[in-house]
Length: 449
Image 1: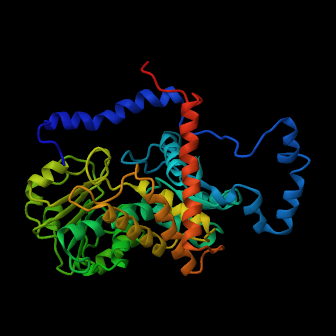
Image 2: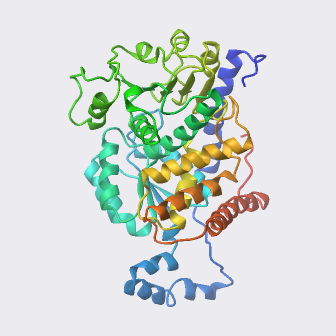
Image 3: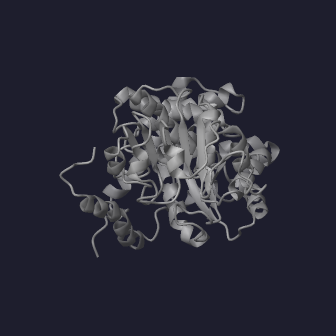
């Protein structure tokens, strides 16, 4: 709950602080990740084991049986974070080098929250076929690929091709990760307001990669597509729209399957009378107006997740009558953040060496994530666990791994207990490693310059 004693100006200034701190601390550390050994080095003679001549035996073992690569190397725990820098956060097409700080941050979250070793790969090409080719070429080094910050509609084409053609799991976090966490938040928001997913009317504002996948996943989880209204930059999608290019297959699909009321207009008309609004669109404030929120149904749910500024400030949405409000920011209640999803989803995927990440695996993660928050005690300002609730991540990983086994896409099978112990051990190790490095001064404490 926002403290009413704090002025709106103070809240806005608080919202700007992370950016100011980032400009001080990034140059201090010159990056956020590095490569460190995970094997013993008792003395220099051990290099005869880890490198030549000893390493030749593991090499030949893999040559005889390709699956042995998972035993002899870190492939089973290594994820490549691939981007072309064409859709970085809310910043747009800023290029691969300007996107590198985000990819390093993603790798940091993978490790600290999921115990997953991840490495940023920023590609100097905008050609989708070149991206696909590159991912396939580098895949021997990785257990999975996380596509990141690739523009729409190219991201759909790249993901669809790679899910079919790559021999390791490939997913797009801006699509599947955002969708899983948003679904989890919606599941619990509906519990708070005592409404059912199959009954509610939902408006999606924005038709980027995230909202396309969110819409599809919510429908797969039980929502009625006829009760959806989807809004792009030109207005509500409907069968009457004749301005949509054939390359935007998802938009055309939504024109035909949503908006049974056949509404016209923009955001205001799309929101009126709706139970739920989920917006990942133009950063605000004032992309969505208070008077529009006031026309929603009773006990309305509003997810305004544009970054860095939500489409409407959450306190304004509350003032307008919204019962539950979520944003994409950690400094407001109810953060809808991929970071409570992707580290655990990949943890579970890698632990059973799954060949792909299915939509059902993501939905399983969403329901377990929602259950974690419910177990702690749901209320209007607590829909989802936060990143500091580390015990959530092993639970989520187990749910994903179990679904992979059920669907027959896992190479390995374990009991629930074994899965939990594996995930917990790896996640604890990652967190303790950072704590030790900080305690010993190897990671230097930040001081104001």
